[in-house]
Amino acid sequence: MMSILEFYQKFKKREISPVEVTKEYLRKIEKKDKDIGAFITLSKKLAIKQAEIAEKRFKEEENPPLLCGIPCAIKDNILVEGIKCTAGSLILENYIASFDATAIKKLKKEGAVILGKTNMDEFAMGSSTENSAFFPTKNPLSKDRVPGGSSGGSAAAVAADFCQFALGSDTGGSIRQPASFCGIVGFKPTYGRVSRFGLIAMASSLDQIGPLTKTVEDAEIVFKVIEGKDENDSTTIKASFSPFSPVSLSKLKIGLPKEYFVEGIQKEVKESIEEAIKKLEKNGAHFENISLPHTKYALPVYYLIMSSEVSSNLARYDGICYGRSILEEKGEEFKKDFFEVISSTRAKFLGREVKRRILLGTFALSAGYFDKYYLLALKIRNLIKQDFDKAFKKVDIILTPTSPTLPFKLGERISDPIKMYLADIYTVSANLAGLPALSLPCKKIKKLPVGLQIIGNFLEDEKVLSVAKEIEKILKET
Image (cartoon, rainbow, N blue to C red):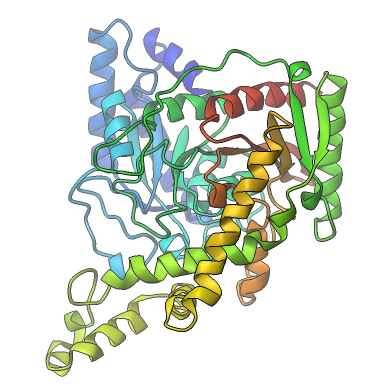
């Protein structure tokens, strides 16, 4: 598998053309994706048109942008003008995006080629991509296993070499966990570094768009393009990309939080991470044991805050103002009953997990329970953030497993939501604190990958990427 830079150099030397590469990727997807289910929609006409424009740019411009002609895939909750955007839900099954998300505008300006939209858990609610309203996605490395979620389609597309990179969204680990399960790199930037304008909202204070790639360097290239202040998103931060000089691990202190290495982590995962730590120590890395004491509350706090925001954000899908409606099928029967239209629309077109989270969030926000649940969760969220603030006074970065388990089997957890939620136990804290975090592969256990997570301080995305590049190099060499 070639990197973005390798593709770029071959385009410049005219050894291969963007049109040839795009057509080859599309052929590969049509031939092999039936067994994986990475894509919901292929955008063939758009992809060919973009490839032709990219090819022209390589002929006319001396140095086109690095992503020019590079084939990519987009999670199906990020709007691409003129292309279906379902968010993995029946209620948006026929929705055609009327504008581009800010991240997509930036990719198009660079000349990237958008091959299609990838499968996902409905409205990004899930950790396995089995909650898609259309079909589950399989892990390309072992087709009886899940690819993780909710960006499982994007992760599977990159791992299967159906595209060079993909965009996903990460609310509680939905980029990093599938990256870990599919043996690729997944990067969640600092909250606010990438605009959420044009991302179908799940939980607005937690959601963040980021890249899934084959190498850390590729993730850095994509991040550099999509990050930046956006007048359409008031939560974006003015902090333009500033390359971090190559880092020597011997000059860094790396924190190992004791709360991430306790009972519950799968033996093979723990041993793989410990083996990686020893390799890094041999190459000069300095590790320090630290504590993030409020980690034990992170998962319940996350699910309370997230579900409360889900309850608010999904209120618009009512069959009257927004989304698909029961009136399409039973117009006369429901015309006179406003509330029946809403309840019947949601009952028919929203999935079980989405309904579960709406109900949980509505309960947490209801009179008499707001202070007891939601407000308390916000207070503990602040304590989790303070834990990280204290830790980063002692260490430069924090290293943890990405997931407590290897990729689990299809169907193994779908009927047990608590077990499914536990798949995010090591990733949700970074979202609650708004910190940059990256997952990269560190080992395979019988073809099943183990992901290593690097968490950085607020706005230190470039440092995380620089450290990750060095760690990736060491783990590949040894």
